[in-house]
Structure formats: structure tokens, C-alpha cells
Image (tube, rainbow, N blue to C red):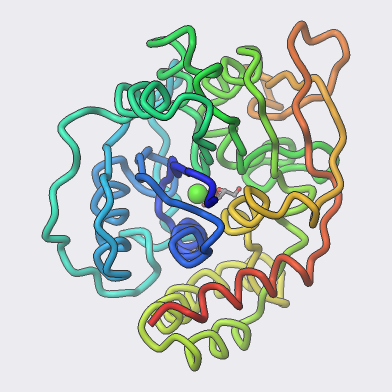
Length: 307
Ligand code: RIB
Ligand code: CA
């Protein structure tokens, strides 16, 4: 039976890869997308999420989330990495659908209740909606099967500052709230996602197999890879968000360790995920090593099946 999954997302180029992968893998039953700011604003994220689903010919609910971090003021979007609208230079068509009336935190709480113990929530943006869902319902964690987070870093340093990974940095207070809430959490952070790197040729080959969706990813990643080149990384782009989705259904590709994680919420190292046995909370399963080729092959072979 396929795994019921909801993605909380800020699309974003690697978010687009992750969403298409989730649509393509028969081991995943994608139930819905919820959206959050990060790479783009929340209204842009909602529009982009609906655009991706419509391009893939899939009708699913999209629920729009919170517009700013829990405590910090809003951040500028990541336009140098993902483009002004989120997908590099790709021309967006305004989606035909409309988002759910129910905001993302309420939507997540209701879905978890209606599918008790079944849903894996996979946040691939800042954890603002997830923290808010925990505030709304003390049983939210219990009602989920688990949470697989793309974010953080144990020993790989940061990607937005020297210490912080972008999704945690964009709402450190939400991340800290989520880690201390006692959920069944798996962390797919930079220790593994920054090692799964794909060059332009990977996406060009994907475009040959899947002219529409693969072609779209090839066009988007041209911009994304230009960004990586501009910071001296010349072998392609990191597959952050798709690696987290692959992990949801292929944990055997990953080596994990149990850590108690705290998030630094002030000072120079704000947004850092710190392993500390003195953090009074339950363990997080942290991915520390990865079978890089297996992740890439799994991503390619599934997305290649899309038209
Ligand atoms: O650090 C990588 C994460 O930040 C990914 O989710 C990417 O989409 C960006 O938001
Ligand atoms: Ca993302």
C-alpha cells in the first residue's frame, strides 16, 4: 500500500523536483500540498504549487500557509537562487484552480485527524505551518505517522550562513518548537542533501525521457545551476528537497543516528541545528550518510515516467 504523504513547500526549483517525484513514485500517495514562504512569498508559493500540479495533470488540494516567521520579521525571498517567481526563467501560466479555504495549519490538523497514524508530513520549507499546527492540536504529532524534514545540518555547516541551513534559518523559532514537541522526526539535512549533486546533463537526459515535466525541470535547473556556479560549485546543483522525498520511501538508502536537536534562536549562529544531549526532548533520527547513486537513480527513473 502506498504511503500517504503531504508536502509543506515553498516552490522553488528543488521543491518542484520533489513534488514531481512524489507524483511519479507509486510508493507514494500524495494527498495535498501546503505552502509557506521561503524561496518565494506564500502567495507565490501557493500559485507555484497549483501550477506544478496542473502541469503534471494532477488534481489535489493546495492549502495556503502563514506569511511570515513565528517571531522574526519577514525575510527577502531567495530570488538569486530560484528566480523572482521561483522557477528560474520559466514562464509561468496562471493556474486555473483555487486554493483551499482552510489555511495550512488547520488543514494539516484536520488531515492528520482524518487519517490517524497514516500520514507522513514532509516539510521542505521553513517549519512555520508545522509549528502552528502543533499549537492548534496537542495531538497533532500523535495523529501523524511521522515527519520527514528537509532542513538543518549536523556536521556540514550552513548554506545560507556559515552555521545555518536555509529552511531552519528562515524560521528558527518554529524549528525549535517542532523539535521539542516529541514528534517522530527524521531529519534529511545538508549532511546528505548537499552530497546528492546533479549536473545539467542529468536534467537534459531527463528531458529526453519526459519532454514536458523533465523538460520543465531542465529549463528551471539551468538557472539553479548558474547560481551554484556563481558560488564556485561547478559540478551541478544540490538535490535538497527531492532527496527528502526519496528518503520518505527509501530509508534503506540512508545511514541514520539519533540526536537530541536544539535550534539556536539568537546571535551570530541563529538557525544552527545543534546536537546536545542536554536538550530536553525526544531523539530525532538524523540522516548522516547516503547512497548518492541510489537516490539519483530513484529520482530519475520515477520522474522519467511523467509525460
Ligand atoms: O537548504 C535547502 C532548502 O532551502 C531547500 O528546501 C530549498 O528549496 C531552499 O528553500
Ligand atoms: Ca524548499
